[in-house]
Amino acid sequence: LVRTLTETAVDGKTHQLLQEILDLICDQTKTDFKEYKEPTIYRRINKRMDHVKVNTLEEYLNYLHANPAEIKLLCQEFLIGVTRFFRDTEAFDILKEEVLPKILAAKAEQEAIKIWVAACSTGEEAYSLAMLCWECCAEINREPLIKIFATDIDQRALDKAAKGIYPASIAKDISDERLANFFYQKGNKYIVNADIRKMVVFARHDLQKDPPFSKLDIITCRNMLIYLNPGLQKKVMAIFPYALNLNGYLLLGPSEQIGDIKPFFTEENRKWKLYRKIKENIRTQPQYGLAEYKPSFGIPARLPGKNAPVAQFDEFFIDAVAENFKITGLYIDENYQLLHGVGDITRFLKFPSKRLHFNLLKAVSKELAVILSVDIRKVLRYSQEVEPRLVVLKLGNKEQLVQITIRPVELDKNEPRLILILLQEIGQTGTNLPPAETLPIPESDFYRQLSALELELKDAHESLHLTVEDLSTANEELQSTNEELMSSNEELQSSNEEMQSLNEELHTVNSEHQLKIKELQELNEDLD
Image: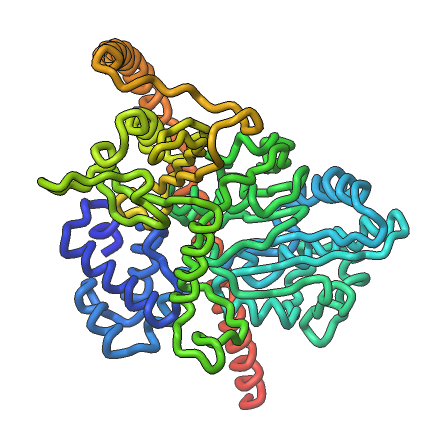
């Protein structure tokens, strides 16, 4: 079955069955795996299919419907929690010797260090960082004001991490000195001491939809991105520049790439994927599914003693702002069709008495249409707000100074693109007002000249476009080769972690077998 799912093309029916399985998991566990890499998903499903002894995806889907408990077991199968204390020792040495001393030096005496360990699994990495922070503070005789936020989508792993109880086998990853300083032993278990435990806060957090922490000094997100599709990788990576302080550090897994957020960081260590933030990222705050993440503050949907819903109060507020500040708002689609207006739209829009239309450029004056046409095209092309401009327009019988702001409206990716146009009347023209652009008189000669210039611009643009396409083709070929290598590397890394997880399971089973053998031997000796 693994060969069927991973080595051959997946047909439409197989893909549909897979989506139904992932929908079942999402409905029951609120965890969405649709953007995880399919080869990994297929391998984990195959493992559960072998366990419950079914042969096809369709049979397994029916089994899931008949056995809801299997859904949670499959979800747990997807959550590959391979981790250990001080994993990749050299990376942690760099954090202790280079990163933490710099952060402590930049902090005031009573200012806390804030660290986020994303995808923390059972907590080993978070506690490792806590130990490093404690040691660095002790070296400079400073109170360890450390707050580590350790998050994951696996609640079972978080519960285990919060207990801080680990098997005796961790001794091979932790020095005797650290075991003595930060753990106490109880039977064949090691338990994290209270000083380290109180530095770490464990919480369930889904990087796909939950808002991030902010004002952080360090973020570690290691060996989680390798399981995600490129689109979700980019979405998750966009969180990190927003969440980090300037000169904060980001540590990724050795097989992971920084991607599109590279302009905001400088590389501190190439081998261990350590980066430092050097540029703020104010205008690109990541978007989240806030409909799914609404903290409740106990505010009633209606005000006490009133029948009007909150939405109606919002409308009153918007209308009052529009009237008091003389702002007119117009929503249009990418075809320039008017969809909605706020404020006194009749100040700018004139509709004919016959053959009613809703095209913005036909509803405004010719001089305003020229400006709006240029700026709207810029917004559609670059998907960002254009610089506001001041212009003089004749409104009624008076010349008015008007500020024009045009910006895109951010909706779901499946929704059509919308544009918001804000027209604010600053006042009548006069010496005390800021300078405005001089608008051309709408004469036929002007429009003929404008058309000729637009044709020239179009020819130049097409010529430039051809050149850019040639360069893009060569660049895409190189990028495709690079991505194939990166993908292969990530697949190897994720397969290696799965093998390591399987090895740990086999080790546990082997230990149990050894124990049983010992018991049988003792029983035989007693019988003899």
